[in-house]
Amino acid sequence: MGEKFDVIVIGAGPAGYVAAIRCAQLGMKTACADEWIGKNGKPALGGTCLNVGCIPSKAMLESSELYENLSEHGKLHGILTGDLGADVPAMVARKDKIVTELTTGIEGLFKANKITWLKGRGRLLPDKHVEVTAGDGEQTSHAAENVILATGSTPIDIAAAPMQGDRVVDSAGALDWTEVPARLGVIGAGVIGLELGSVWRRLGSQVTVLEAQDVFLPMVDQQVAKDAFKQFGQQQMDIRLGARVLSTEVGKKAITVSYQDDKGDQKLVVDRLIVAVGRRPNSDGLFDPGAGLLTDERGLIHVDEQCRTNLPGVYAIGDVVRGPMLAHKGSEEGVMVAELIAGEYAAVNYDAIASVIYTHPEIAWVGKSEQELKHAGEKYKVGVFPFAASGRAKAQAESQGMVKVITDAVTDRILGVHIVGPKASELIMQGVIGMEFEASAEDFARIVFAHPTLSEALHEAVLASEGRALHIPNRAPRKRA
Ligand code: FAD
Ligand code: AMP
Image 1 (cartoon, protein in one colour):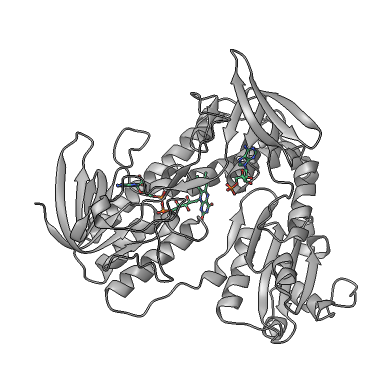
Image 2 (tube, rainbow, N blue to C red; image 1 turned 135 degrees about the horizontal axis):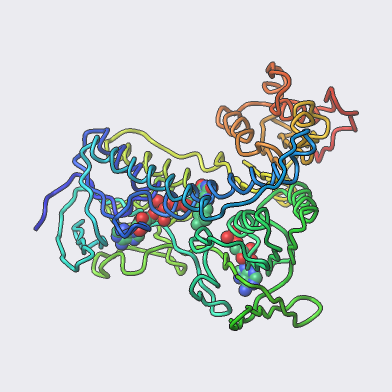
């Protein structure tokens, strides 16, 4: 029998490592088990997010965007760049360096907080015992007062497009190519498919995205989604909706993707293919059946609003439970659970969690979309301000897109903020803070915004919802009351 801990966390992604740090800060003797092996063959902390997710994808998005800005938009700013080239292996190496710096940074934080890193695969046994199997097969067993399951998720693979070396890949594989494929297919126009498709399109691939659903980004406010769709089209990103992939044939030279749309059977020939059709929770083999842990039919661990499972003293957080598969959602659940274990009050406001798609244009939203409110029969007001009327956006040559604010027609509270355009990922947090403080449209209207900033677009969108925007002609406020 190994050591006894106050808390053992299984999984060291943004949910698990944050939970472990907060538990340690609150004075608990904490261990964290993780089985991730990094690109250098050594155990690495940080999970999907740091190793193959949020951070490496943003590193590649940033490099490819800078390249496209210089090659395509430099002239517009009077910058003459001459012959410009993309050194893709150098981009990938930069990305890998960032990953190593951040994952070793978490290692440092574990040491500073005296968290025991149990390297290997964790399994929950009855009575809050945790068995850890190291890479060499050696098993240890540890007891804990509390266990936090934070094992995250893995890409879904579909029989219609099985992985094949570096030619048919999942999101992790698509972050490691060192050559630009001439023709790239992407299955799935979700967040990950759009981000990775954008990286390779900017570097020179001709990108075709096949999406089974007829509606583009159904979880996004449709006015914003339609604007984004138009902008992707202008970039020659070919997004085919209502296109269900049925099979793929990997030939010596090319990959033939067979799909069906409303016109019948179709074929797409590409050099490389990214399968980005969603992620499934990592709960297989995570617990001994005798432990009695409840999961649903998709493998998500059953939890209440405060991430308690059906077993006393056992919690589950992050991608392995219900809710959006987002790093910041998992981290805040980690903090909440640590504080609950310490006997404090803690909660996560699931109504004010921002979602972001880091493409160009960026797309970001929080709260309810107009279609959701309409469907629910709510009374609301809408204000839209186009970046075309923002001085700062014009100065940046980024004047496409909009900020859309939806307010409650009765209480004046902000119900949703939806942005497509420059720095949407940063702007959205103003909406989140406003909603978190239950701000009214009037509160926002009275704030003095610095000029010239992109943030003024949010201010003006709120004013537009009252029919009193200053820098666009006001239409009668669009109301559903
Ligand atoms: P994970 O990060 O998946 O970590 C789980 C950890 O548990 C892993 O290290 C795994 O090895 C380990 N593990 C699993 N089972 C066991 C076991 N039995 N024993 C020991 N260890 C185990 N989200 C955002 O918010 N913003 C973004 O920009 C963003 N971009 C993304 C881009 C890509 C390409 C991808 C793939 C994902 C992106 N995500 C993004 C999603 C984000 O990565 C996840 O929501 C987040 O990582 C979930 O955190 P987690 O801690 O629940 O799980
Ligand atoms: P997300 O879950 O946001 O990562 O998005 C994954 C997308 O992949 C969803 O929009 C699905 O509709 C889409 N998808 C799943 N299976 C297929 C398929 N066989 N062909 C085309 N698109 C698919």
